[in-house]
Length: 139
Image (cartoon, rainbow, N blue to C red; front, side, top):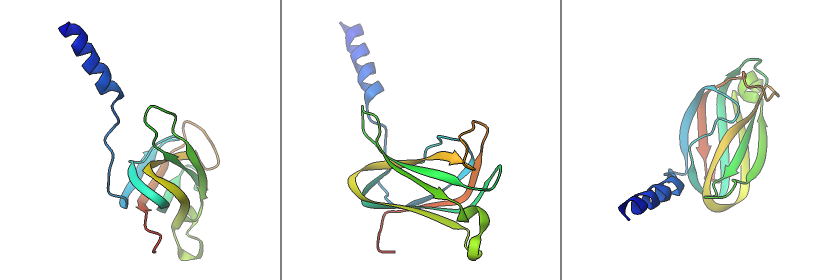
C-alpha cells in the first residue's frame, strides 16, 4: 500500500502546475536564443506589451514574437505573432520594437521566439540586449 501511495504522490507532483511569476512587468534579455525559446510566465489581464531593444541575429533582419496563454493540462492557445524589425536596424535612431496584445483574460502568459530572420531554421540564433514586458496600458 505504501508503494501505491508513493506512486500516487509522484504522479501528482508530475502534473502539478509550474511556479509562475506574479510580477506583471519585468525585464530580461536573450543570449543565443533559438527558435521556440520561451520567456518566463507572468500574470496579466487585458493588455501586454513586449519590447525588444538592440537585437542581433545571423542576418540582422527580424524576429517574430508569439504570445501564449498558459493552460494547465491543455495545449496553450496563442494570440498571434508580432514581427520585430526596428530593434535590428535602429530606424529613425530608435533601436526598439514593440508588440502589443489587448483583450486578454486574467491568466498567465509567456512569449516565444517564432521566427528569426524570417526563417524557422534550427541553427538561427537571437540576442536581445533588453526585453521589457509592460502590462500597463497607461504608458
